[in-house]
Amino acid sequence: MRDLQAPPSSELAPGPVGPSSRDAPEPPPQRQRVAGSARLSLVPLEARTPPPWMRGKDWTLPVGMPPQAAGSALRPPLTGATTTDPVTGSAPALEGPSSGVSLALMGQQLREAIRRRHYSVRTEHSYLAWLGRFLRFHRMRDPAQMGAVEVQAYLTHLALRDKVSASTQNQAFSALLFFYRRVFKRELEGLADTPRAKGPVRLPVVLSREEVHAILGQLSGTLRLIASLMYGSGLRLHECLQARVKDVDFSRRAFLVRDGKGQKDRETMLPLSQVDTLRQYIEKARRLHDRDLVAGNGSVILPDALARKYPRAAWEFGWQWVFPASRMYANRENGLFQRYHLHETVMQRAVRDAVRAAGIAKAATCHSLRHSFATHLLEAGYDIRTIQELLGHKDVSTTMIYTHVANTGPRGVKSPLD
Image 1 (cartoon, helix red, strand yellow):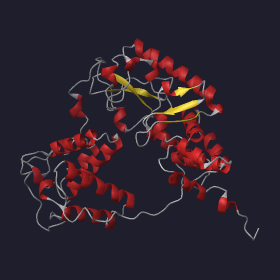
Image 2 (cartoon, rainbow, N blue to C red):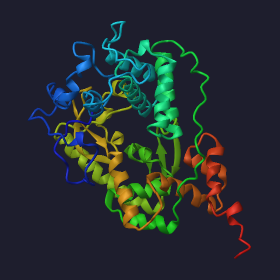
Image 3 (cartoon, rainbow, N blue to C red):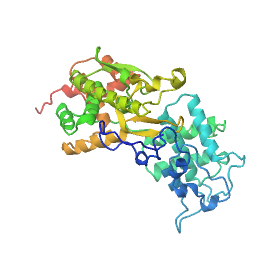
Image 4 (cartoon, one colour):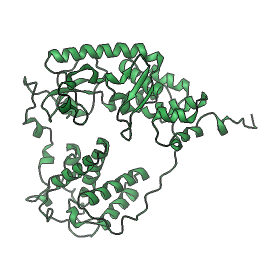
């Protein structure tokens, strides 16, 4: 949905937006519908060419796999590289799925199984990516002919060769279990009782108030406003970027988070120091929306089936993004040029550069601003339950992690050396 771009807007242009696919040129004058021939041009040639061991067979990758991953997956093996199967030691299977079901169809079935359960889009992309990596590891063998032995071999490869973290290994484990249970409708014998990797207990990276202001001082414009809201309201990055105009209540100084982590809504405070700045920015967004309407565009993507229930809601200003992108994209589902919100990578790069420019040696990220929000409230004497509600944690034990980094409790004890 982000591969074709309309001409950029100069009013709300905080910098380059999104991945490189967003910089693809716009098709000539036809602005309202997507040119069908543009789809194939965005896929690398090597992703459309079968590898030597799959020529004449069904070599299609699962639906949803990025073209970049597809290109690296389908490259022929390097000269001198082994062509034996990592598990059996035999030559890789040249046959596609014996049932006649294509690998693309398997990916589509996995996608449908995830969407029936209303899992998040991030989970869908992650599970599809793990399925693609698992199949490439076993040289595109038929998943129906593989089982617990092959899954265990891949998990062992992740732990010993790739040295992934415990959380990454567990995520791959969950994705493959889900795939076999929901797509092939069978349990992997000897794998269901396999213990999960035990992850380390980490303390969050917390910034002092001086460090937070030093980072904010290195930012400007839209990026500074987003960082201020993440620290002042305790927002996750995607919660801040996915906010719509109707979610900001200036009269109550409230910021409504819709469909947050775990598909939960919550309400948090709006920093008083950012009210006027945010109000001015929303007025600029209104003028940008008005220009889009004059140009025959101005619609945004709506969640679930709201576009059918309220056909004109996509053009209403209340549903527009608080932080719209500077360029448009061509939505392949409805054929319209629409404007998405600012891409997360823009903010992540900006905060990383700001941390370096401020001379802070900590491994601080955007999420460190949310950690600092909770820690500073705890140090100010607010009770843990209030902080839990503001952060949207399901269990108070998750919020209790901040008691280990706040200057209260054991950390408030004065050392006898001092």
